[in-house]
Amino acid sequence: MSGAMLNPVPTSFDYRPPTEPWLTVVHADDDIVVLDKPSGLLSVAGKDPALADCLEARVKARWPSAAMAHRLDKDTSGVLVMCLNKRALGHVGQEFEQRRAKKSYVARVWGDVEADEGRVDLPLATDWENKPRQRVDYERGRASVTDWTVEAREGGITRVRLYPLTGRTHQLRVHMLELGHPILGDPFYSTGEAFAAADRLQLHAEELGFNHPQGHWVNFRVRAPF
Image (tube, rainbow, N blue to C red):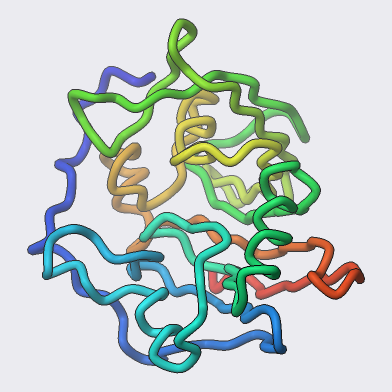
């Protein structure tokens, strides 16, 4: 982990979630709703009343039975699925838990990544002195694996596609930092020019595939807005 001074942890006073569009529905049927979550919106509400607005609340206002099958970080945008009944929730939850769901993200990172592809296999744990940040921890960390490929080199910035094989908190953000290439605009793990290079975290969940509760494979894709 870099020893550079990181940005302060944002507080509830910094929370100004986007409101336009209020909700972007990619797909809906009797079992699932697939959303395009914007950067800056919490997946679920925080404990502070100021953090009540979230994707889950917005979806429940339209589909009261909706429940989260997985989450995206507040600053990450992209494809997220919610379930509309207990059977669907149990099924989709198993797709993630058993790692049958296939996910890919797009990110823009600081620096020129030399190799064309690679794998990061570093265990992660909560950095208790700097929550909610995570850190590499070989003693207490949980196994965390990310595959990556370079999509474009943009002169000091590299566009990469990330394939998380596990689903740890801040996994992609910490793994890229450990490679020496923090994600642009990351309020937790980037500093200086890397933080200032973008007005938001340049991380987007672009594609998600899984076995639908009705038994067929589905794949959803929302192109990165950067």
